[in-house]
Image (cartoon, rainbow, N blue to C red):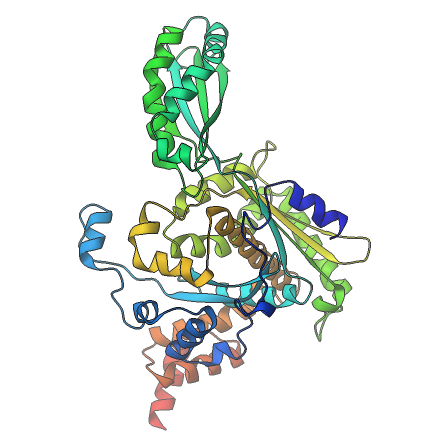
Length: 454
């Protein structure tokens, strides 16, 4: 292990989060799905089922629409009138911490899955992605008002720490038995606000394999009367924070100039161009917003596919991006002493594999089985690897031919469908649109009319 990777892994818990390192050579999964894009959807699913060893029951889930029964949907949210489907695809070629993964992604935008898979293919030849996670610590905030001595109230709360932690842990004995539970408290003082002095206590809770919202909210509500008793103040809000800055996931990729070489650009030139593009995002919030959206293009589809809360992930990501006092890039890109491109991504990642839609949605469960996920930490690591791959693809395109050429070529199928193409017509029209670099609905209609005359 290199000094860089040793330090990287040491910065969090075990890189595989308690899971044995098993690579593709042992027969677990080979994420290199050659010729995958040329297959029909049914053939692709057949190949994924074979590669992941899914059973017949799982295979049947995606063989027909309606995997989410309306009765189940009705129990998940209010005022249900039906279900809404998104396309689900898989990102191939991923090697993370020496293990191959096929990663399900639910998303409506073309080019995302293709771009991530292509960058993963480049990265796998250079060792793939290295990832790590910290412990799954979430914050619950308890807002205290009506205290004239906020700093005194802070010390009274800190003095009662043991009693507060015990009261919080009494809420969830199962979590404590699993090794989780309330670990600590923090107390923040805001002496002057529009509403007068304010004290905010944070419960720091290890939520294990859950996202943890319900757990920490319950704990915050349980300890509220105790906080009032200790301080003489009045508790108002008791709610989690989606800035999960203690629950971080990290990814690193290192690729050689040879791996980045194309017919038009040398690898060294490509790397310099990509670093220049990153530097723009590092200094300018207008660029950083779009740069970070590209990272979330990779992460959100996996969050959605596994039934996790993508709004919480987005909120945490963008709050984290402004932690230095200005909005900036979530990722970093640089060149090491050997001229290799090194990308890193560190961000909050509050995901779970138990509870909520993750447990009730049949396809969310199927997504976890496709990846053979065994912990929330493992899922968090795949999220940041996917986000870094997507970011790498965007920088590569932007720094060379521009984003539109590749994106519009893949978008051409959508345009063909809008123009009325069906079946084999879709691919034929899309190919002609892409070849002419003229991806417009009007042009697609003309091509379709010509094709049908033939």
